Image (tube, rainbow, N blue to C red; front, side, top):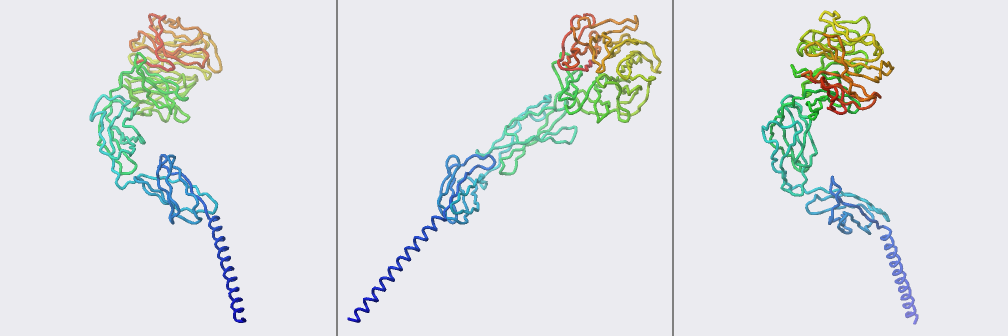
Length: 506
């Protein structure tokens, strides 16, 4: 009995120990489940095409070590939920695209957000096909100075988007102009030089393979139009030189809008245009071809200066080989290559503002004024500086716009008949007169001038049957317009070019 009792006691202890062990195991098990729940996080984000941010659908997203796998929706969005905390490699895979692997760290009860960019798989991608230049055809002539370039190109991989680069150079210099990021097979180039041969080439890129170049084609631009009228217009605060035909329809910009260029004077013998241009704090003479090419500075050591640069004028001489210009109270001559600077005339104090020379007679007309722009004198001198004729002197008010006729028998000039003398040099009643050296009389050509306006800057037409000039309101701030007027019919003025000034017609 005692033996049986001992066994029973031992059995009871064993049972108690077994139950305790099971309870411990259950406790441990419950403890491990709690850790697993607390150790979960998530990963979300968006998958897009590199460069365009276009959403990519049906991209397979998974982790290594493996947790779960999902696919992006139509918006490129994915989300991996209940991912145990730890470090992973996140994988994005789709046929036709390069696989992407990103290292991530998942934190307990945190959401990691990651945007992935994917590129096209390039292993089997093929380069663009050979480019064919279509227009202009090779060695084409008479191409406008605003030329439309057309080519054809294809890529064997239809999903590839091609971009193009146009290279352009001309025969006159080694500069190559590059026009990039073109998405169409047409491109228009403007501002080309007249009568110039150009060479152009197109390069295609699919952003994957090596760029493909076309052959090089040549074309020659048209000859410049016979624009006999030159003038200026304000563009972005700068005076810019233009030319136009005698209808005012064919207009060409000759100087850049970034430079202040004014008072153009055309020479039909040399087909050059001389004009004034600001160079720092000074004003100098320049010449250029009629299409604006081959720009050349003429003056350097002595610039053009005097009262009011808007009124200063100069003159061609020696059949286009020289220029005459004022500097304060002195008159100079200079060769167009910048050599042979000579002083021709000097006043006793008044400023020389305008000069015009008739090469057939050798007569030089001058306009002088005081420091305020008044006390105007208009007179002519011979080659030695001797005064020949006095056209205007001793009158109040502003005057100017001198221009000699081809035979030297007449002189155009303007004069403010109001006689006003304002500090800002405003004119109230400026009229154009033609002076006859034979009769020594002046005839008013502005009898049909609209009230409240000024007629200014008059020049003879090439056949001297009419004049070209500027008409503007006398308020001093309104727009200026270029008009023409027959000398024998002063009641039929015609508006030629709007918003323009400082005309010359040769």
